[in-house]
Amino acid sequence: MAACFEKEMYPGEIPEYFICPISMEIMQDPVTTPNGVSYERRCLENHLQRNGEIDPLTRKQLTVDMLRPNKSLCAAIEDYLKKNVWALEY
Image 1: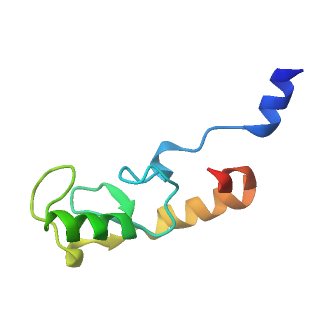
Image 2: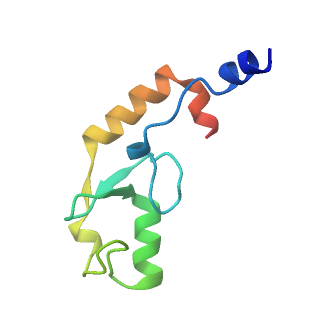
Image 3: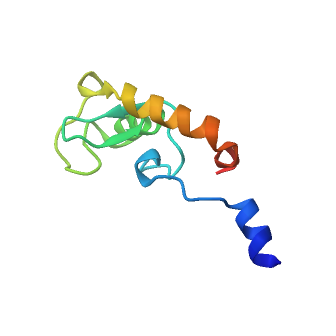
């Protein structure tokens, strides 16, 4: 019975690429850096303000102007959350 309860509470895993590497939360406004990594815009901009214009992964120069909205990832996340309401509590 416990297994059934757990399955109802946690019906699946959230795709890893929906998760911001900085906040470890589902992204709402994903942006992509020149090296192709996506982050939550707010988290990455905060990182750049606190730590200087340094990419958190490559340690190369990274400015806000270099960030590009990841519209396809944003659409995929929105679609996933509509179908998996439980994930909103993640």
